[in-house]
Image (tube, rainbow, N blue to C red; front, top):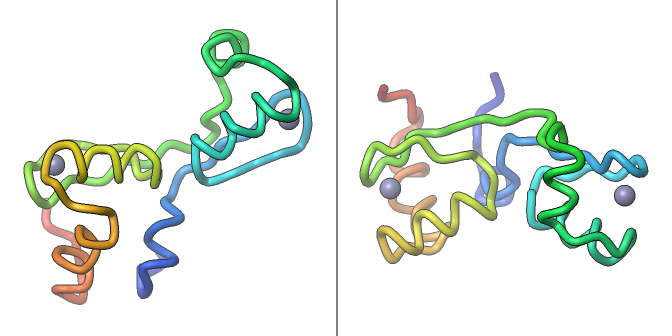
Length: 106
Ligand SMILES: [Zn+2]
Ligand SMILES: [Zn+2]
């Protein structure tokens, strides 16, 4: 297991998404969807339906604010922290991730 020791590292998330039409991969679903749209001119909803296996690795983390299981993907995580807790991803990181050395509470 790798430790998360910087915001940069944390903000990359732990998921992996790949484009079925070329060799593009990203740790962020938003980046993949943007790629699909711009590079292949395909609607993201169509893409998700055609290639449901685009999320090759999906990791969830427990939100320290509410205990919800959130996909460890910067797009989804920041949406969650911001919509539910009015925290940006950076604010969440500063508040919960750097506070203790380990974030292993279950
Ligand atoms: Zn592609
Ligand atoms: Zn939450």
